[in-house]
Image (cartoon, rainbow, N blue to C red; front, side, top):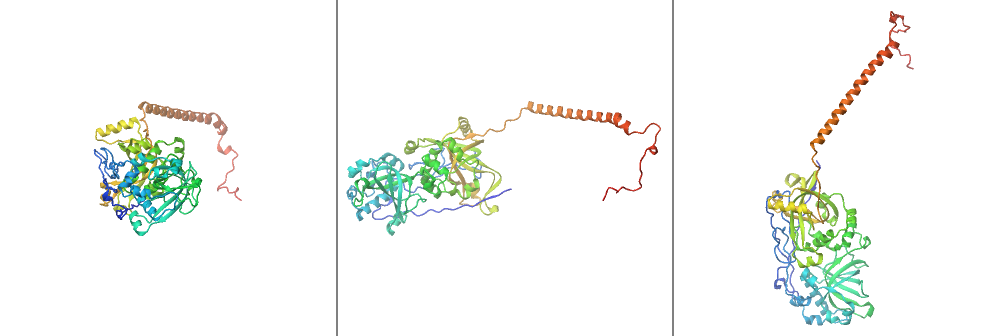
Amino acid sequence: MLRLIIYCVCFAALAAPAATAWAQSDSAEPAATETPAAKEKASSGKEPSSKDEPAAKETLSSKATPAPQGALPWEAPTGGPVGFRSPRDLLKNFRVAQSDLFNLLDKQPLSETQQEILLRILYNTRRFRGDQVMSWRRPIDWAAIVKEPSDYRAELFTIEGTATQIDQIPFDDRRAMVFESPVYYRVHIQTDDAPYTAIVYLREIPTAWKIGEPTAYHVRTDALFLKIGDTAATTDDTLELLFVGVNIGWFPQAVEEHASLRPELLYLSRAGFDVGQIDTIQRQNGQPLVAADREAFYQMLAAARDADGKEFQQLMAPEVDLGGLLTAPQEHHGEIALVRGTARKITRIVVDDADIRKKYGIDHYYQINIFLPLGEKSVVLGKNAENAPVYQGHFPAVVCVTEVTPSLAAEALQAEANGKIVNEEIAIPAIFFRLWSYPSDYVKQYDPNGRQPAPMFIGRRPELVPLAAPMSPWVGIGIGTIFVVALGALWLGVWRYSRGDDRFQREVLKPKQGLRPGASLNDLDLESRDGPDFSNLN
């Protein structure tokens, strides 16, 4: 029997950010904390042991409210004040006053005071929730901004274009401690719909991006307008407009944009998935699902729902590489494969977040707990098979889909009502999201702090795999009859052949080879030798 050895990786949490004189502490915010505690809820009903099956999954939300009943437990999401009417209103609550915005003088270099205001705004971009961004952002009117820039100060705009240059700017020690990063970034974006250049300051960018050299990344950002940049080295047709970015998405169109791009990532990008979200997914491998997964999860779910059948099928692997997903998940994010296994439980998850409903048109999805077949292999979670969880026959996984067939939905409802499990063979063309983990009594037998790892996939709809239909008894009788008739025909043929051979011997060979009546062997002209004849040997 083959044995697949899986090595577990442990992750540690970091301390909360420090406060400074100009960055108001989080305790002053009249809302849920920025870093929520994990909430987990065990599934109910008669379930297989946790050795084999995931506990109830976690749900994603942008609100600081518990997951709905029946949903799988997710990390509680980031909350925030709900009474803010605009980005200016939110910034004002965090020490970016209207007077600060007046100090952002247009067409002049950034002064030290203006730099301080820029960084204060940059620090507070982390407080913008997804539903607020959806509500406040607007298409950009370049001509209007250039004409009356003060009217649009700290307003949120969506900018699309090509990132032609990325600069990395170091923080001093004090600010590095506050931002929990030694650097921030300045991205030059050549816009698609105007001759102007947008200079966008950001806390983070995709880790794959090249720094300090010409680039051609297709991007989209939601950013707050600050001011018109220094015009000493520009003309009215080449103005630089300064922004602070709340986010930035990378939507590559060709493999030439970066050597790390795989065909399936380009496909997902064209379907609306921000490839930069892979960074977030990679950081969370092996961990419970958290609020940071939210945007990437729903983007991938929407991409799977809208998948083009032909191209999707061309990129799909015929089976899941379970060993690769467990040992090196960071190399497989976004890969497409046919996921086959036994469905054990199906849960319908209601999406309450208004921004997700509006942005992606998703108001619910289904989570399917599935057993992946191992065949003759076994999986060991550790180096020592004698003191580690061992899996034979199957391994647990989770698939999230946007729809299920009516028959599968009906069976899931019936199983839930009767306190039983679903037991259907299904196949789902799906995208690998990431490796997640959940509490497991079986794993805790070997490690009190251990969690069960399970691959998570995202797809559109599962299809039932039909089992071989039982053979009719009349078919068996027919096959048996044919066999008996064939056997009889064979015996009859052998018998008739045997009779013909006897007749040939009697009527043809015997008269020619037999003695004449009254003759003996002595009358035949035969040569007799006492010993063996070696005359033919040289």
